[in-house]
Amino acid sequence: MKTNLSKNILRIKREILELKEKRKYNSHITIVAATKTQPFSIIKKCYSLGIHCIGENRVQEAERKFKSFEKMQNMQRRFIGHLQRNKVKKCLNLFNTIDSIDSLKLAKKISNTANQLKKQVTGLIEINTSKEPQKKGFNIDNVDEITACLDLPNLDIKGLMTLGPNTRVKTEIKEAFSKLRSLKDQINADYNKGLTELSMGMSGDYDIAIEEGSTMVRLGTVLFGSRNRL
Image 1 (spheres, rainbow, N blue to C red):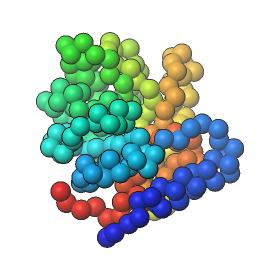
Image 2: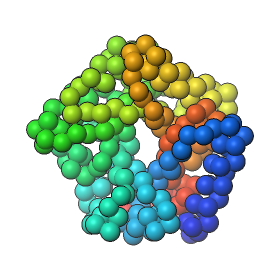
Image 3: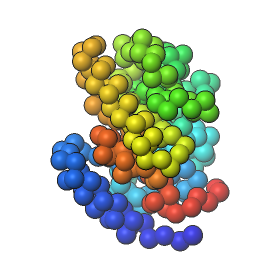
Image 4: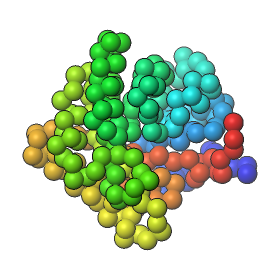
């Protein structure tokens, strides 16, 4: 399905501004273009149209399709999929941030690998706010393990991430996003942390996520249309 990427970006930016005004929301909202299955030419087009943040789900795909970012030096490359521990080193060499740190074991592996590479890694902790068994992420009630990630060396946690529940019931989606915001506020208050990012909302529910305080939305279908296979 052909889509007009330029028009889609303008429309979504306009919608986000309207949602921010409705909520009286002053924080910046980052659009992460979810470029899974999209060719590198689309990444370059996103950059030319003012989208300077992409998200990829698979290390292997990114390794295969990423080319030179020399002319896109401020393009953020965010890993947003499930990361296997044996692919951490490759991931750190390909991406600027890891937005889907879904266990303490993975966080420790990232910390240790970053130390070996002598680099500082930024990331987000993934929380399973809907408690759906098929989803990855920390149990929202396991605050001790979640906060243990915040003090690991070479790992700078900026905030939290979640996937909306697999439902069209707006109240359930709203509740899942509200829980993530509340958890961030709780951690900041109880542990004197400065978490700022809430990555929540995708093509089907980003409007609800923004109403609940999202600072980062991961958009694929609304930008590019239905996915094509590489």
